[in-house]
Amino acid sequence: MASFRSYFFEKAIKASVKRTVRKGVNGKGMDEKRQMLDSAARRLVKLPKNCQVVPHEIEGLYAEWISSGNTLADKVILYLHGGGYALCSANTHRPLAASIGKASGVKVLFPEYRLAPEHPFPAAIEDAVNVYRWLLRQGYHPSNIIFAGDSAGGGLSIAAALVLRDQNEPLPAAIVCLSPWVDLTSSGESYRKNERVDPYLSVKAVREAARMYAGSESLDHPLISPVFADLTGLPPLFIQAGNHEILQSDAEFLAAQARNAGVAVKMKVWNGMWHVWQISGDTLPEARWAIREIGAFIRQTLK
Image (cartoon, rainbow, N blue to C red):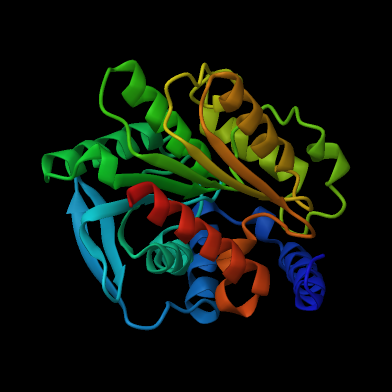
């Protein structure tokens, strides 16, 4: 059963989204949308206590080292944020990444990869792969690196791992996916079943974002929609999704395809939860519990 608080939380999200749509956000330019999201995140979302953020530059990209309290020096989470490959930044997702790092006892490297439509596929994948290779050059062992990401960042984590596998490069120890966006064809049942209950996403907006990211490529390209790829050889996957989000089928399809390819998978669909509810942090019990489970998985993986 979902918590009593989550019921009102979801109602508030729906009301907030409706107000935003009424204000005409869909008619605004991409830069203005990004600025609005960043401003809202600064007001509403807080970092965990004792969190340290150190800016860094990697291969021309802005990035941040995020740590909370005592962290293991030789282990790292490479976190890739969501936002439909077109929106969001460290400002919007830094608290979520920091909470996962704190629960895991591991520092986080958070790069801001290039965004569509200015930089469509495969720019984001190139950036993610380059940052991972940079970590290897710094002396981090692949067995001490975790890929993690939410929504588009979850799909990006899978796609980056596929590129590394195909180029015979060492893979990270595991991949953590929160509400992963991995089927940009929108073919899953949940796109219809959950359209009315999803407080955040609409099928129309998701399809527009998919087309913007894919550019001239087909939406079923295996690196754009990794559920259509051969997932053989990938490291273990940890997947969380909610049964109130239109991307529920993406997560379930990814888990099924991975298991069929012999990949170890831990997956949980959370009752009453919406897209990337984990970002709600300490204000929502289910977010605390989900992050705690992620932390336990990462600790166990990295021992």
